[in-house]
Image (tube, rainbow, N blue to C red):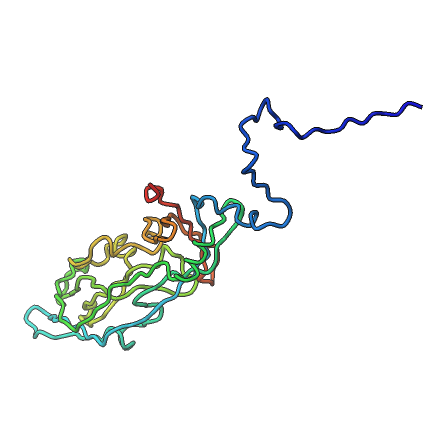
Length: 272
């Protein structure tokens, strides 16, 4: 009977000599089975985009401020004074008005394309407040200028109105980030010269021109929270690994929750 000869493998030469002659046999690192190397695979380079689940918290801190304005009911009438306490709830409904809001880190929305290093994860866990927007409020009691309201037809009564002055920001649970903005107050007299105080948002003030903004109002103060995010004002800088992320957009799909997703892009200029 003939015995079948089984060829024996030889391992005394360089493997794949023709195609891979430059392999360094002494420094090949192969992870087989359960290994921490697999867990840290995505730590070789920080991801270009980062998506974080965040929430919004608000704060209300107002001063005891009284605002006055002088006016006349008729051309030859006496000068009167209208007066309102801004922040005690007597003249203005303070529901939804805040002095500042903060964007707080909750969790990383992670997948194979969006995994982050332990250094970044630890930094976010220790620095959960990513951004704080402080709205401009009135700090001191004062008298403000009143002028004739030309938008109302002329009658025997003088119709007056003030410019719009800083009041507070607006926020309630579930509000779209595009509606979180600076709000203003203005004062005037109605059709029968009865005094009133009104509130208007930045968006309505710009779009409707119902009231003229005061001269100290600059464009930067009119931005919404979504504007701030899209303009990259939410910045995450991790000094240990010299990586910086800037916000580029916000995604909100909930109606009654304050939870949103913020998308960041790595600032590659910082890596140079």
